[in-house]
Figure 1 (cartoon, rainbow, N blue to C red):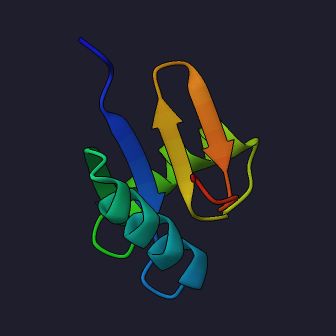
Figure 2: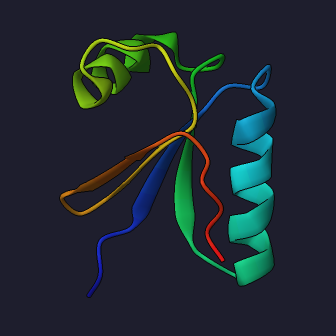
Length: 72
């Protein structure tokens, strides 16, 4: 069974919305962590990004993608 993609987002980030819309259009399953609702997760995000507070960040298994690059 594949790892569930985890997507760290922030509501003020238009790229977060773009990534979620593209994943939804593709029918991809993912777990969203909205950093506005779960500010304690900033530490996890910063560990993934080398200290940067940037969204979106997606994690699938050992693969981490920072920013929105377009999925399809």
